[in-house]
Amino acid sequence: MAAALISIRTEGDKIEIVNQLLLPHITEYIPIDSVEEAHDAIKTMKIRGAPAIASLASLSFSQYFTRALRQNPLPDYFASPEALKAHVQPILDYLYTARPTAVNLGNATRRLTKKLEDLSAVTQDTRAIVEDLIVEGKLIADEDVGRNKAMAKWGGDWLINRVQPSSPKTLNVLTVCNTGSLATSGYGTALGLITYLHEVGQLDKAYFTQTTPYHQGSRLTALELKTLQIPNVMICDTMVGSLFQHYPIHAVAVGADRIAKNGDTANKIGTYNAAVLAARHNIPFIVVAPISTVDLDTESGAQIPIEQRPPLEACLVRGVVYPSENGKVEQAQVMITPTDLEGIYNPSFDVTPADLITAIVTEKGVAVKKDGEKTFDLTPIV
Image (cartoon, rainbow, N blue to C red; front, top):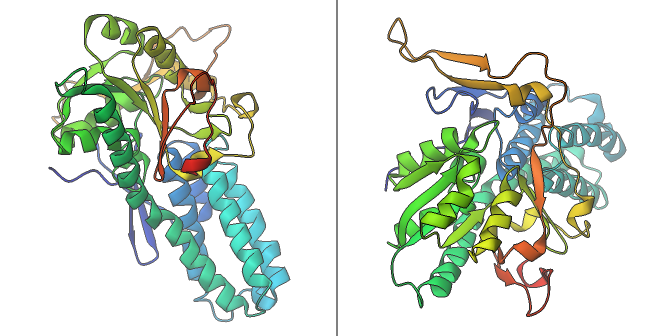
């Protein structure tokens, strides 16, 4: 299989990310040289995907303190653990504000806060504390690929065992948004499940929605599937019902930005629509996400904050100029609506209730609802 795309590249204390706003026509890696640049890249969606933004935030945190250790003399906040805490916490709080719906980002910043507190309780050596924090930040990013492959296998095998007794053919799976290597540190979550099915010869076609208004499906998922040479079909967001009526779709697999304690799941806008239609057509609806996406402190989806994106984003489309006058790849951004619209509703996410979800998959296994239950017990997989 062809090599997957990479969302984040690191070498020493250097960080580069692929600017996902320019994909699929231009592949441009841009440097991230500060916490502020990482925050901006996350907020403006140059990088997106709950696991990937947590990885970038953690790596930029480690980068910041790696460079601080090289200063001579050391910065004043190295004077004591208390001074270090006073300096570190605002940085973590600031990173969290970039995209608060994605619980992975909050988990990463809380994990680093706890690590700082634990280290400060046992040593006054601030250099040693910072060195351990740097390792922890890098570890958060490094853990992602292995767990993605684990959950892809769990979910893929579960789906094969569920579907194939009644349908010995290879499977058709629909996904929403982009949940592959570009949304993670590698392999992917829901798209990882699709990749796994392809690798073991059990996939017929991957279907994916365009996922407007940012078109993460038609720009990013399309590019990943093409790169991996996986047979695929794109549909508009409004075509999900028609697809289910006319073609054999064996499952819908989606990622998640936050999973509440009861299994309610926040994911890219349009996920709820697909879940409702999947329920109508008795198609299994599978959520694939790492344990870090499960938020046991949030009882239900009603408590999940939903990010409202700038209204203008729903009016714009970015793409390649075709044909280009000079033969080079040129991009343009155009407005597709009247300029004086009275109102624009532009949430980035919606919440799919647990009763519409068939299975939730993490790196520890697959959870399904007990007979007669409408919510999940996620204890075995977190």
